[in-house]
Amino acid sequence: MTYKDHAIKSVHAFLVIVLLTATPLSLADVTSELFLFPQLDAGHNAQLDDSSPTERNDEVAGVDFFLTLGVDNFRFLGEFLLSSEEQHFERFQLGWSYKNHLFWLGRYHNPIGYWNSAYHHGAHLQTSISRPAIVEFEHEGGVLPIHFAGLLAEGTFGIAEQEFGYSLALASGPEFDHKLMPWKVSNPGSVPGDTSGTLNLYHTSSAGNEGRTGVFFNYTQIPAEAVGVDEIRHISAGLYGSREFSRWRWHGSSFYVHNRLESLGGTQSSSAFFNAFLQAEYSPGERWTFYGRIEQTLGAHEDAYLALFPEFVEDRILGGVRYDFASIHALKLELSTNHVREDNFTRVMLQWSAMF
Amino acid sequence: MLLKKAQMMVALACCCCFSIDAVAQTNPSRVLLVCGIESEIPPLSHTEVRKLFLGLPIDKKGQRLKPLRNASDPLLTEVFLQKVIFMSKRKYEGQLVARVFRLGGVRPKVYKNLDELVDVLQQSPATVSYMWSDQLEQTTNLKSIGVLWEGSAQ
Image (cartoon, rainbow over all chains, first blue to last red):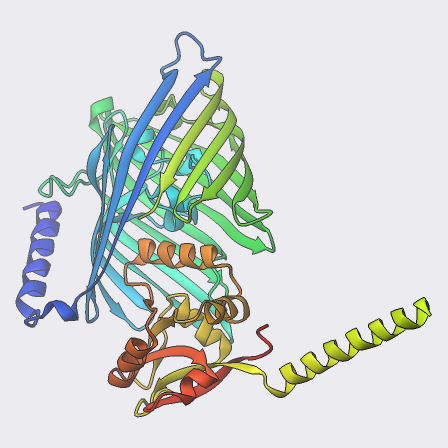
């Protein structure tokens, strides 16, 4: 029996224990929240090279369903994305809380940096339309393990009137088959990745504000036999910060990413790249928000791992505007110049999003 | 003559302003943090109140506090958001949703009906809410555990 089989059996045993030990409940004991985040996206890429794998136009319609249930200290959290491009559970987590600490089991967002912890698929909650390329979702050609399946502990603690937080993930990461493929709830018997982990430590406001400053470290083993690579050993580390000053909000992150590719023939190659982004947002009033973002990658062309992702946007300069109306709706317009491995292009995006 | 009339008008206007201000200062409005009379919740600091109503966990005397939002008076909501939470309504609602979306749990329940809010506060010892001091005077079995704001709400 492999350790993967052990992991699957352990998860099943945990679920059985939870169900057996749960006391009979009335509906009044259960707390719940249900959110719907519909969105319509339209994008156009101009000045593309004829040989570019990037599509000229794309339109996506979708709804992100979010449900959370709570009974005593137990918690369930599920997020299902239904769109014209894909339909599956983005998050599926069972949790238990103890004071300021939460312990989760299931599929969750890898706490790698700030953006991936703060924003998920509900487009309405994110100021911009696009995510920074370094934390792009796997199915969109993302290069980092965005979703994990396994254990996650997170919480906050105070030291001398200062508030600190942590996230520790121990999980199975994705495998690589022309894109990163994390574990799917719809196929629970298949555990694609190998041992992975992330530690994220941060300082946050003691007054309950959302801003934080932190560091993270991630290690992921990625099987990639589909492209003739036995395994990719992927290490990333970085710093991040998010702060609000009056009408301004800033997010920034840096990533140092080291990869070692071990081929099926036994040869090894190592390479590394550095990526950073900074997003500034300015809200002159309640309805309008203007934002801009700059993304830069160093060492991308020498990196054997990034060569597996020809659509990865190495450098980007972006500007956008968001208009919120009728409490729950938002319109966003974004214009960016993008540099991918073999091409440069300009992208225009328009998005309507809402929250119910 | 015209100058004298103008001076009198200015003096009258000043008198009116001072007298309104004096009334406001002698009868200031107060927003109180309240809970059931039998509740053992101790006074909370302003930071704890802010964190509690932003959805962060606050434990006191071995129990997790449950914040309840008093939406019985729009002015009270406005004062609470501006003077205690320091956020606009849209931003506050957005932050509550973002937190639940990230970590699960529930947002503080909103009560538009004051009687209903009072009933829940009386029955559940871990619940806390806020109200005008004169709203508290009209109820029984509730107590104040702190002043969140005091001043003229005009």
